[in-house]
Image (tube, rainbow, N blue to C red):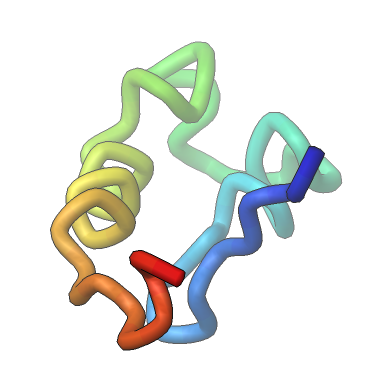
Length: 58
């Protein structure tokens, strides 16, 4: 199974300072988990709305 990689143009703070990182994000006390944060949500939208690769059908 292929792993999904996060595009370099998406800010993925959840892997660095968030719940999957060192948990040093100051917003974690407000949102409890990254999935409740608007930055995480915006990253998801960017991931789902990105252009389809040229060789997708192949």
